[in-house]
Image (cartoon, rainbow, N blue to C red; front, side, top):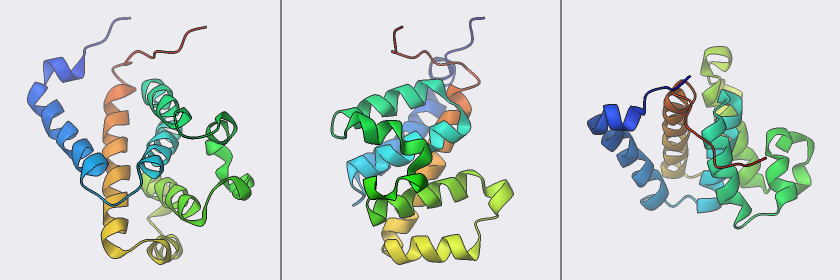
Length: 148
């Protein structure tokens, strides 16, 4: 079934959301690779095929295929991920599943220990932005570039 192209139907909304994306990717001190790791993990949790495909491709430009393939089980292969990457991925899971986790004090303390206050806020904005994109990409079935 063909679905609407949300960004064409609501260009002002798309412009606003892409403004947040631009802030995250161009105006924070977060490393680009860390941002894309978070984008990928949040998209995996939310089941957005378009975003999983897109950010997996972005990561494979700078990261080994093995590491990209294991993002969904990052906590089982801690030797592949830095302390900061593990903290970001844990916080991404906590915030994405906020209705279940309620952003626990323990998770907050762990994230706050790994990031400066500004970076922690920017990381949380990164997570929130990807959740918003996933909530448009998945229901409107944005296409993937992957081929069989």
